[in-house]
Image 1 (tube, one colour):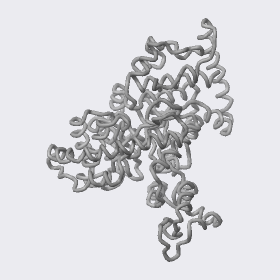
Image 2 (tube, rainbow, N blue to C red; image 1 turned 135 degrees about the horizontal axis):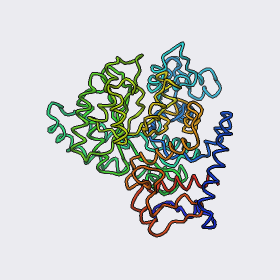
Image 3 (cartoon, rainbow, N blue to C red; image 1 turned 180 degrees about the horizontal axis):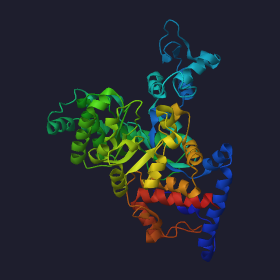
Image 4 (cartoon, helix red, strand yellow; image 1 turned 120 degrees about the horizontal axis):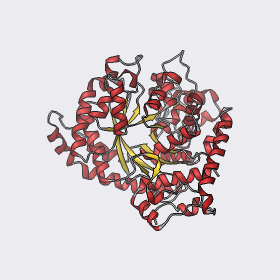
Length: 497
C-alpha cells in the first residue's frame, strides 16, 4: 500500500455511539484552548506550531533558505567574503576575507545576514520592496537543490505542515540552458511551439532523472518514506516550474513552454508560475503579450492548473491603470486557478463582478501577509484579507520567501489570527483550503467544496475511532488529494483529543 497508514497513525479505540459527541466536545475544548492562547504571542505560537496546518502552496525555495545556511555552506566550501559587495567567491580579491572569519567577526556576519534578508531592514532608510528583491543578488553561495529542499521540508515537517507546492525548477541547469537557447520568434506562436517541441524530450529526460535522484536523497535526509513526492510520509511536496516575467517575450515563451511540457510529462510537476517584480518595466509593458502566450500554450498543452502571481502592486510602485485589470486578466486570459498575493484587488474595475466570478470559479488567493508587509508596506486593515473573507473567496496562508522574511508558516497563522481576530473554525478553514485548492490530482473528500459534506464512504472520518474500510482505501489509492484531506482530518482529530 503506497498511502499513509491512517489506521496506525491516527486510530484509537472508542465506543461507537460516543463518536459524534466526543468529536464535538474535543473541538469545543480545543476552541477554548485556542482562545486562551490568543492572550499572548508566545502562547499562540506554541498552540499553532503543534496544530495541523495543511499545506504551504506559495513558497520560493531560493528565498526560503535562511542566510545562516548559506553562510555555513560558504565556510564549508572555503569561500571568500567581500564586505563591499556582500557576496562570496572562490577566489580571494582585494578586501575580501575568508568566509570562516564571519564566525568571529560579528559585524561582518550581521552585515551579510542583513543584506540577504529583511532581518534588520528599516523603512526610513530603504524601500522594503527594493531591499527585498536586492537580496537575491547576494545569494552567491553554491547550494544544491537537495540541500535547499531539505531545509525547507524539514522546517515544515517540524511544524506539522503535511504538503508543499514548491517553486523550484527540477531541470538541471545544462539541460535547461540547452532548451532555452535561441528562443523562438513569437510572431507566429504555432511555429514557435513546433520549434520548442523538438527540445522537450531531452529536457524532460534530464528532469525525470534529477527528480528520481532527489526523491531518494530527500526521503533519507528529511526522514520520511520514499518517494517524498508521493503521499506516503508525514511531509511531501510537488514542484512548480517558475518562469520570469522580466525577460523578453521569446524567452518568456520558451520558459513557459518548457514548464507546461514538464507538467504534461511528470505528475511531480503540478503547475507553472510567473515570478519577479510585477512592477518591473518589462513585466508591465509585456503583460498583455505574456497573457496571450499563456493562453495559447495552455489551450495546446493540456489546459493544466496554473497559479500565477498577480496584484502584488500598490500605488507606490504602479500606476492605477495597471491595477484596474491585472487580476481579472490573469484569471480570464491567463487561466489562473490560484492567484498569488492579489493585494491590489480593490482597484479592479467592476470589483463585485470579479469577486462573484472568482467565487463561482473557485479561484483561491495565496495570502502572504509577512512579505506583503515588508515588500509593499501593506498590513492590517490595509490588506484585502477581510475583503476576500467577506466575499467568500477561498484563502490560503503561505510563507512566500520565509528565509528572506525570517518567518515560517506558524508565524503566518499567528499573524493572521492576531491581526484579524480569527476563530478556531476560521483557522481550520484556512488549513482545509490549502489541501482542497492544491493541485494534487484526484477527487476531493468534500462534496462540491463544502467542508460540512463529506463523500458518503468517508462520512465518519472525523469520528475518533474511525478506521478505513476496504472501500475507503480504494478511494484513497485513487486520489492523492483525498488521501491528504483524510490525513488532515485525522490530524485534527488527534490534535483535539
